[in-house]
Length: 323
Image 1 (tube, rainbow, N blue to C red):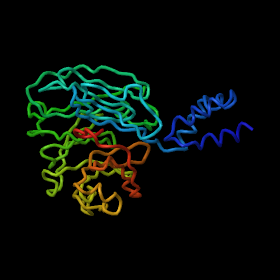
Image 2: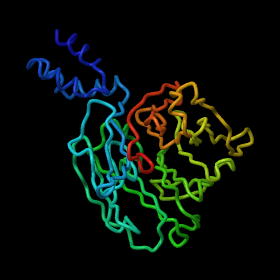
Image 3: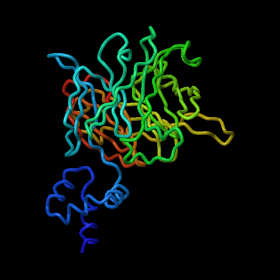
Image 4: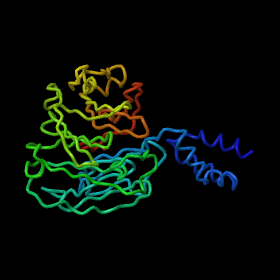
């Protein structure tokens, strides 16, 4: 019966997209079931979105630096290496790239890349400005008004947010942005800046902006931002992976508290801890998220809810923040 076959096919692992393609080649009947839009909708609703891979910037000794897609599943993009391009941000199935030219890379504009379809879209360059310190993010255009699950919106309209650290542009900003990727929560982007002591909250719908002060313990530390299922913003500090959560007390005063401490010695191989690990970024989609960690023994993902760890790639040539 088609209904029973469909129930079996729905349970193929989502982090192995090739398994669906192989199943579709078995016979016309299976191909018809898998190609049906109803099947795809049920498949997406049954499984949480898989991690197909991540993008990191690689130093190439033989030429220009490379922005490399490192697969963590059976998916392989046609162009895994984007030479002379630097990855800035990644979200909702899109990767934001810019030129390696110096001293102001954004003056050549940006490139938004869909690794799955291997399609590019050029984004015009922002106004020229002498300041160097900046950051940028790409996101689904539906985040201006909400209402998108982001399960399959990579072909829909998108936005690119570009921020310069100059008081001429933003009255709140008098120092530089960190190169760490921004996080999106509740229709707002959060950027680290001012030597990791402050966070800029940028409302995508209203274009309003506010400043959040980070805990003093984060001064000059390597940290990343993350979000939680219940709508909180958190900070991750490496070494022991301290998770700081911003919450309001009974009087309505906001502050930071340590919500969780993840001991890496019990989770990672001993040789991976021969040098202090580095938290690189946080990815969230479909209600779950994970922290990406650099070690001398490779890249690891850590689920902050379950502490589940997975080795997802080597570190050869790794240059800076991973997206």
